Image (cartoon, rainbow, N blue to C red; front, side):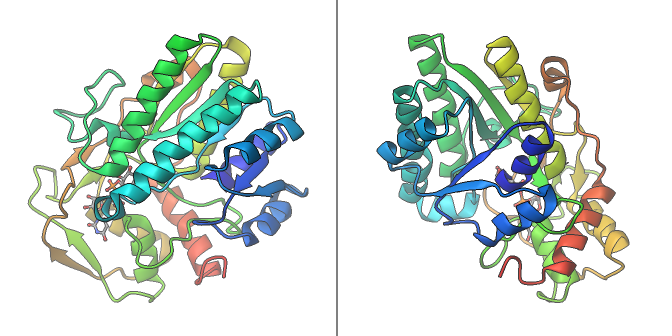
Length: 325
Ligand code: WQD
């Protein structure tokens, strides 16, 4: 997400500075970004938990605004290792906010998630739906949103853009950057891509008895390029208006697991064998956005289709079978 947003920021005339500890990313992405954008992207290696270091970087580069992507995001892992998530995600956000305050930088775009809605009573989902968490990962996003709200009350000078992503998938059309999960992918799209390329024998479809058109889970898959452009629009809105906001970043439509499989087979020309399996604990039947508020406030809407997402993922996966290694 961060690397794709860097490209979009440069294309919009911004100069991004990357802060990364490379715990869930690879330094090779920097060379890929230079290939795509034609310029070197400044990267400072360190940990968001190191508050003095973050403050020093913000001062050194006279940063006008911050986008906070640094956090762990695997739902299943968060259930198995809750303290890792509370430390990295919540303590990391506290550290970043303290560093921003000390460096007099109070413009922040925060990467939140549709997971804060838990199991929605209905779909599509609007921003005023009740928030509930069903796992520690979603809990950390919910707590950080509340922290930001408290910061806003304490000091109205904070300019805060909270973006609730739905299901980010896809890759930059160059095929040079994309999702590179370590180990067995938790999420659907990277797993499907690894089946298509022959790295995995089949896809386990977690449940086909949901109250959905074909019985499999329905999600709002949104292209990472659309998401990246949504981040740029959010930063521009904050810098121009100074008004904080919370918006859903989704397409407004849902696709089932089997529809994603079929779309990927069409895009790749490869079979994706499936096996029906038991439901995955914590999964919900349907989750997709009502994206009108982001369209109204940011002048942004998702434009890429599921076919675009699958085509771009296939170009990345087939060109980089072992990711950035
Ligand atoms: C999608 C659908 C599964 C894998 C999570 C986080 C969310 C965001 C995206 C960070 C579901 C089914 C999956 C597989 C399957 N993360 N599936 N076989 O769970 O909707 O959302 O990741 O921002 O916050 O909650 O995404 O891709 O894991 O699952 O059948 O091997 O695919 O049951 O219906 P999810 P997912």
